[in-house]
Length: 303
Length: 258
Image (cartoon, rainbow over all chains, first blue to last red; front, top):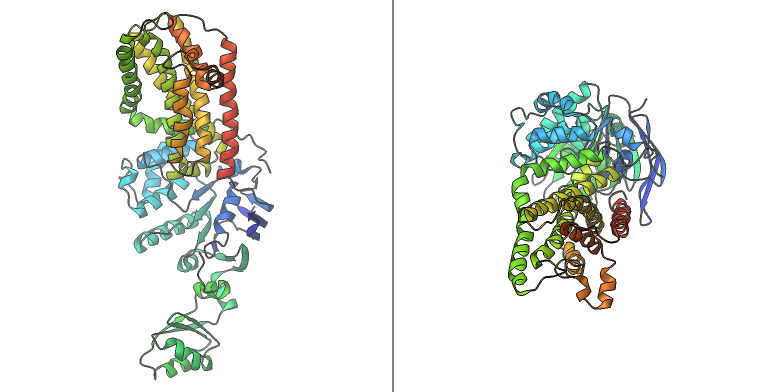
């Protein structure tokens, strides 16, 4: 049984289709990423999966239960890390876990023995009695993750789990998510950090304007959509250089501000040419998911 | 598409317990705060103004005022909890959102909030009842029947408050409710003086306001009398509570489950 199956999901607000026919199916034990610019429909899709928004059309099966018809029963078996921290500021760390466990119908006597393990997992050992107000952003995020585990869920839904965190805190979250995957949990993750998606997800889908633009394994997506090598050329003269010279050496060129992105199968001729342009700085790297994302969703700003 | 499983469940009690745990940490200051304001009015007006007055409805003015004070502060406590505190949990702290990610429905959350605000108002009303009985302003044990009336009054005003919370864009919005609804009610519904002092038209309007029914029940009970028209007053409060809760649920669903 798939932990989450969504087919032809549609949702409109005020005549605008925010989710316009999205479908995907999670495999047990994988980390699946939903990527997309702001307004792509990621959060609405998650809300529909939780039964907090009734879709206009489509079917959702969450841990074997039809949603929204039996959303409450389904939510009993999943854990959610929301985009914005909503820990209880009036409580200590331990009280947050106990009170949350009660929402799952657990008795305090069932929850208390779990607390040391959850705190150890989230790197908060010794903080049981600490007030939420004294925790850093990273600690709050980890506690939110621990809170989502109180009912030992089969599936975790994470909405932008590392937004707003510093690099150290992000790496720690990634490490914990990998541990959960190693324990056999399934994870659905939304993010707009491409490195996060590439690092964690076995498969990912790119959403734009409420539609799924592509879906697959990160390496396969790069291979399918984009040339393997990228040379970024930047500096004041880069746009002018790109307009005159770049096409001779590149399969595809995109200019954004003062940077030209040259997509190539073989970077050697381009790099040799660039040696004669000392004012231009270059960065040669393999293509990544961000390149795929930008190719498929465009470079213009989304607000 | 409606959920097939029941939307209100015993999980509402977990929501109630969450609020109780927060309250427990600040119970004493909270109780004293709830007592101070009504007591100042009761003593200030009761002795100050009361000294100038002959008896009102056959008793001293402060004894007359006591029943009104119990009802008005029950109303205030329920309103504050269902407005400011519930709004913080819904909008500022996103507590409801976190609860609804667990197997708890919005209907559970609202039922928990309703019972919590009504319960907290009952504590406030009861605390005042205890103080005034220690002052000898209560005539007989019949006053114990005021307790269920206090709870019912709490339910009615908690439900009305949740409607306003469901509509509120920010805390400022609550000023309208207090200025246009709560404050006039204190003056029109017989808290400070018998409503028959008012022009007939105003009396007719006041007869429809929920606080009128609460005062009409509580005041005679404190005098040691059986109130007239019990059934009508109880039914009015009950109808307000149920109708207001239903409206609040409809509005809050539109706001949060869209």
